[in-house]
Image 1 (cartoon, rainbow, N blue to C red):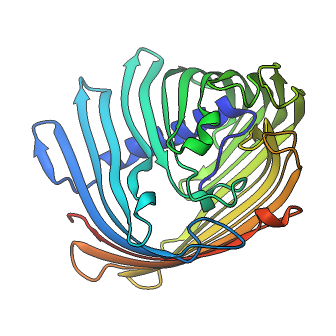
Image 2 (cartoon, helix red, strand yellow; image 1 turned 90 degrees about the vertical axis):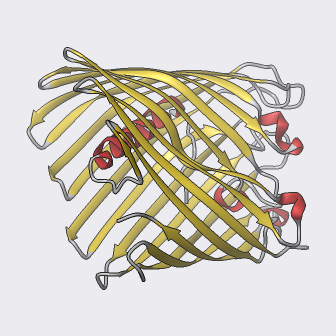
Length: 399
């Protein structure tokens, strides 16, 4: 399950983008590219999936079921400019075709799709990027219930810079985010956010970095339903990495939303709380790897100005044979959304898990079968649901 934005929103996007950029740089050299022309490299990975969803409208009553065909293709490209600078592309595009409810059919964009340019100048690294995604999975967002059409396009363009002073690294970043709903019911969420981030890390030990972080992010909505606001956050972070197979990253701080009275429906009320996240990744052997993320956050709301929640997300992967691996995830979120477009307070628990298996049955072909269970309970009975999703995916990739 994907994670969503929080009150320290600028930091969350900056860290997510930083992770995506690092992942892209790490894998570029080892990919089995489809096309190589000089320094230009392109990997094309097509796939075809079939899903069965027994509750596409995440509703307690009158739930709709459907089969969904999901053709998809992923493009990964890179082109070096000079010895250290790199232009890269990571793009996944596809289509969700609903067999019985074609009105819900639509395009799909891979979460993490981006165009990025890394530029090195002396002790500075600059990352110019444009990251984009299209979300169309209502059950993937804890605060949503009773709607198939929670769908939106999100584009984040910006620049970050790292100044490496050996034991001290200073990071500054700016991003402009546009959120555009593709469902008319949720057009009131359309907005623009300017995100400013600063971090300073000190390497106190070869395996341990600690530091300070802060952000500011003004948000303006297109429609006067929810209130415009400015979010602020400040805190501390750490990164303990004794080896390539283990990392522990804690973050703690304070987040504040300053809401202005721009809504015609929702009284503006400032909100603040502590934030925290502890993320652990460990691969004790080639056969097993696991991770866990535990945290508390304040984030922009969907049916309210803001949501405060606590989450827990463990995952584990077993490679039981050379050609077969098992994956399992669990997710839990407890949240409260109040004072929103709908006046009743929604206190919810959103939880479930995924179990999947991947089989590389030919040199270039792999098949994945997975099952996901999602449940939502609430003090509002109309906002509860259970969803079962079974997915079969066949992927082709060069070796």
